[in-house]
Image 1 (cartoon, protein in one colour):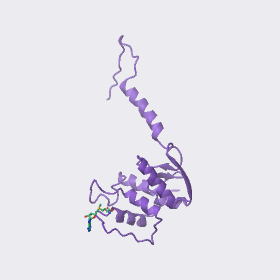
Image 2 (cartoon, rainbow, N blue to C red):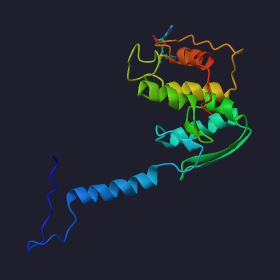
Image 3 (tube, rainbow, N blue to C red):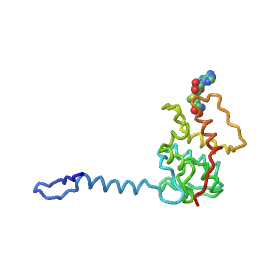
Length: 172
Ligand SMILES: C[S@@+](CC[C@H](N)C(=O)[O-])C[C@H]1O[C@@H](n2cnc3c(N)ncnc32)[C@H](O)[C@@H]1O
């Protein structure tokens, strides 16, 4: 059982918060700051300004119109919601429902090493969601042909085949 050690003031009183109380208060404050608010929200894996640019690129290819709120970590968008939900890599939910990408990430417990992406683990690999972003930005569809002459561990081709192969099922 965890014991809480109170810090004492010079007279033996408990004037100061304990270490645990400070951590708990900071955790609440931090969660309040970083957790997105809204029904169309960033994925928790979006950590850098580069991710913000990638989200923007994807939405250019997928949505009819959109605005990104980087502070509240949410997006307003118009377009085919089910299609966007099935394709987008940088959103966790679209209009309240989880995206296919977030479902796959949950299933494998990893934002990069899902499906066969970890068959050949290598630190310098492409992030699969960068590939997904490019496919979305270029508006490729199941009639498109993606060739990778420097296929390496196959991130681009595997992600492309996943995008063509896994069908999104709405949970509504
Ligand atoms: C960075 S990796 C490519 C990653 C890959 N596009 C993906 O999506 O995972 C570069 C690959 O190109 C291969 N390569 C480099 N020079 C090559 C060449 N002249 N001919 C064929 N393959 C080459 C390397 O062996 C390596 O597997």
